[in-house]
Amino acid sequence: MNKADWDMTGKVSLITGANAGIGKRAAKRLAALGSEVIVVCRNAVNGAAAVEEIRRATGNVKVELLQADMSSQRSVRFLADEVRTHYRRLDVLIHNAANFDLTLKKPLITDDGVETIFATNHLGPFLLTHLLLDMLKRSAPSRIITIASKGLLTFPGLTIEFDNLNGEKKFSPTHAYYHSKLAQLMFT
Picture 1 (spheres, rainbow, N blue to C red):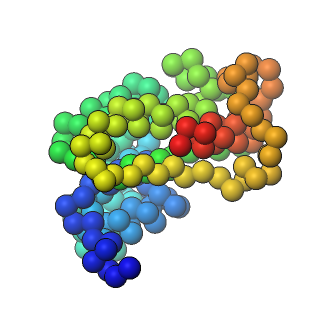
Picture 2: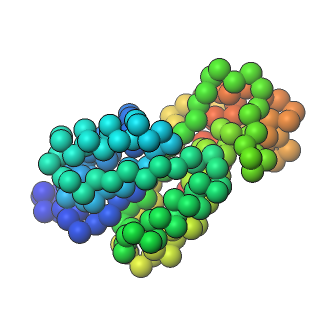
């Protein structure tokens, strides 16, 4: 493929968890290819710093921050409303935001009544996808990309534990993380 095949001028890309790691690298690459990039972060200060870094590194001024907490259904709905209101298209949706808080000793339940790691890593992306699906279809050919975890390979017998989604029977942050990543992978 030549460089023209990767021209993203006129396209809009949204990346959750784009203030660090894989998310920030993806945002930089898409911005460098000419895409308008929506950086979604829970922390506004870290998000703003990432936006400025991406703009500086790529020379693309069409990099914007939208703040959202992917563990909150209310926040995800607000994010989707903001995207639908302020953007006429959405070509790429990358689910990268994740919670892998190893300090948790017991399940932390969100205001929606869901364990936080599962809410952030699976339910938030699931809801956001469905809320933006019509917009993605109108922008076809569009793409939805979900960042998984190679660590799932270490749990070959893992299944969705519908009777333990909130860690009510057993809980560890590692188990909750891989359980949520399996759900995300199955959804994808």
